[in-house]
Image 1: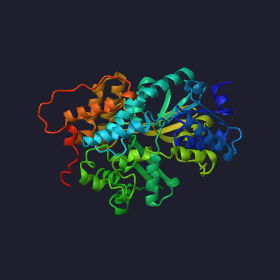
Image 2: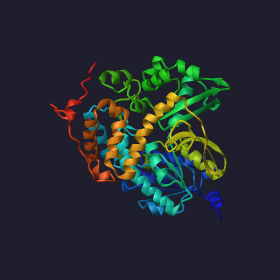
Image 3: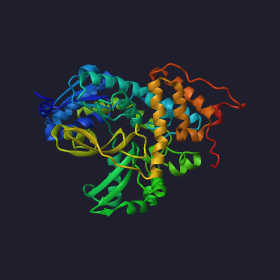
Image 4: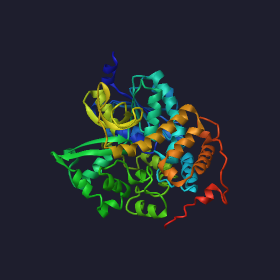
Length: 472
């Protein structure tokens, strides 16, 4: 029996990082919501046996409450055992957990580098790449050995950096990096314009967390002028300030929340005054509050909540979400074509971004697999913004590939938020502290070398950058 015939009988989906608080169960419910996938076999993998057991119990509850009698679920700590014969591999891992996130937010803050999320660019995103890409490469080697025909769907941040490194190492694997920022942003603008989502046609292109809605139409009417007119609406601006500033000045809606967007440039997190103006989270918790990522991941009640879901005392949502993962699996398994947005190597898809970079573009999916669609050139000012991130992404990936701490310094030096706050000597000191704090999770033990200082300080780097507020 051929692979296509086997897939029609039962799809095998392996979820690596299945102990995640919400995501794993969400993906299982989404996949099973398609009649053609109601007999799917799920294999759950995690390194934490307690989380993994709760994930298994939650999955079994989904099967019971959804009436999916033909579906199967199992759980294992053995990743290689799980991957044997897999058709689809979903990756949603967090290497180091909260213990790694806390220092990558707190140490830069001592130097005046104020992050909100820190999982994409900035010191937080760079360090997350350093500790995660080696693990992703291990997974890629296992997939190459045990299920080289599988589609690999990665949901792990920093999406662009990890996808870049993974595709460098495994160009022969079918891979896509997935996020919900494109469909989430489109849904937001449909609600703001009060137009049905099903009646809107749009085109989006760029990089993950900074892709651009370049066409937004309904029945042939260009809705971008209406969108631009809303950029200065106080009711919208106050809860989505950075994205509205982008829209006001650059003319196109950008994906992802303002909290993320405030970190990728030099304009919004300069000091107390600008943070109060652009990152006030009174209207929305996603608008840019300092250190918000720690609030998201510091969940002392995680076990209580997972137990409630496992035991049935917390409601279970079985309705399909907007995540692209299940749509890809359904389109590939059934042959019913689907258009999604995902992260793949550029290779000419966007003319004015580097060929080796990872871009977020439309992708046609059917039984033949993933077929990215060429966009062409971005408006040059939008490409310039994307390239500011891409340079940092490349250096962070090279730091892992070359096992070179000096590349870590270089990535930090060209990161817009870090460069705005620090001198090169201070960035080197910051990098050294970060590498020391993350040593247990990093692929290279060598410290970042010091350089002679050419001036005399009256206080330490950290003390001199306690965010004096300058104009406020």
